[in-house]
Length: 335
Image 1 (spheres, one colour):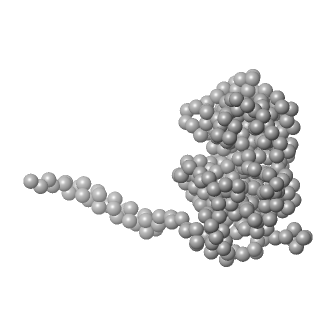
Image 2 (cartoon, one colour):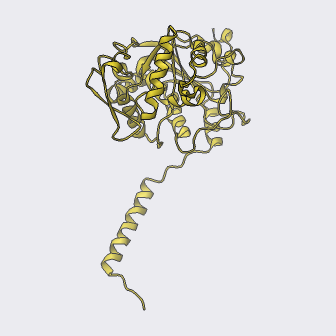
Image 3 (cartoon, one colour):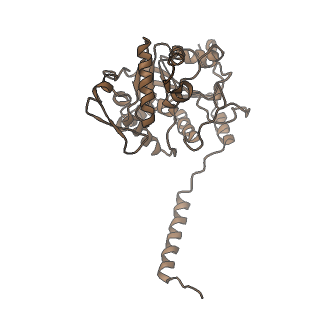
C-alpha cells in the first residue's frame, strides 16, 4: 500500500527547497580558509603596513557605542554599588547581589586613564618562539598579557619582561594552584613576575570561578602585594561577545586574547598585537607549538581562533591595529 502525500504539502516543501537554494546562491555558506591560504595571504601583505587614523577612530567609536570599555571594562564601586545584581555572562539565570563584603574589594573608579598611547597586547602563540620581539614589546607604553604566561629568562628575548595588566582565569587558579585551598605561597611568588601590574579576573563569568577569584584577591592582599586585582565586568564581556558575534565569530566564548585586543582598541591610541597566530605552521610552513611555552591544545569547539584571527587580520590590513607575525625587526634597525 502506498501512502500519498497531499499535493499541498508537496508544494510547500518544493517552495521551501527553492527558497533555500536561492538563498545559498545569493549568500553562499562561508568557508574558512585553510592554514596555507591564510599563510599565503599574510605573505602577500608582507611587512608593508600603514596606520589609518580614520579607521581607528571609527572602530573606537563602534566599541564605545556597544561596550563602553573606558567606563565598563572592570567592576568598580561607582558602577556596582551595594544592592546591585550582577548577572554572570557565562551562565544563564545566575546572578550575585553586591554586598558590603564584596563591594569592599572593588576599586573605586576605572583605573586606566584613556587614551593610553602605544599598547602591546601579547598573546601566547608559539609563533613568538625565536621571534626576538621582547625589546619591541617592552618598548610599549602599556603591555597587556593573557592568562599568567611564564616570563622566565628563557623567554624574555621573545616576549619581554614588562607587564601592566595580566589576565588570570579562575581555571588557571584551579589547575595550577589547586584553587588556593591548601597553600598560597606558590601563587603569590609566581605573581611577582608581573611587577606592579593590574590582575584582571573574570570572577563573575561562571559561578565556580567566583570563589577562587576572591581567594586570589585575598592571597595577594594578605601578602602585601603591590598588584591591583580588577574584576572583569560581566556586562562588558557580554557586550564584547555580542559585538564580535555580529561580525561573524561563531564560538561558545571569545578567547582572552580577543577580549584584551578589544579593550586595547577602546583605550589606546596605537594597538600592536604579538603572538596572535592560532595555526600549526609558521610563515615558512614549519611546525610550531600551540603556545610559546608548551603545546597544550585548548578544548575543542570552545573558541573559534581562526575566525578571530581573520577579523584581527582585517583590522591589520585596514590600518586599525598592527599585528606582528614571525620575527620582529632588529631594534637598532627600526630606530
